[in-house]
Amino acid sequence: MPPFSEQPKMNIHTPLPELNIQDLEQMNDEEFWGYARQRAHSLPEMSSHAEYIECKLRSGTCLIALRDLVEVLPSPHRLGRLPDMPAWMSGILAWRGETIAIVNLDLYLLSTPALSQTADGMLLVTRTASHTCGLLVPALGLTTTIEDEEIATRTTSANLAFADNTGIVAGIYADIPILNISALLTTLAQQIGTATDHG
Image (cartoon, rainbow, N blue to C red; front, top):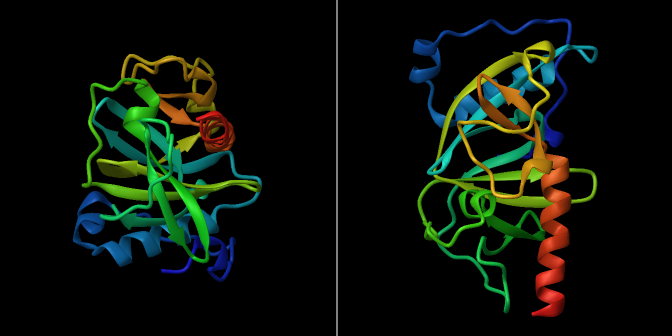
């Protein structure tokens, strides 16, 4: 599946039909992600809303904007290892000609060794202008369209208690934290660099 950025641009003036939950449940994975990509690219540039996907973590639920996702893959069964990796880093993976870090989002957000690494789940490949990273999550939920005014600016949520990671929360929707992928990937890159430099 090519990354979102390589997909042909949709005409933003041709609205896609809204699908109900039954339509989405009948789609296979390829159809669902094709529809999600089209929805993400069909939003007007001056839109006051965005599409988000639920990440069902063992520690709770969080939301990630579809525009921040490049690709969604099954969890890889084999990863390269680096010496002195942080406990929340699962390894490295060759992806589309580059080597990317794979981070267990549960372990990172909670900063606790109580949760063990798991081979099941999904790999979300996320990218910003300067960083690409894979985020391992146990499961994905539904996509949700959220209006900007529906997002609370507070950065704490009863739904998912972060450990010293409030800086990577962009806001809260229905008591579910929305992750700021740009801030998250920048922080991850700094922490991985520090760990491998001083390990």
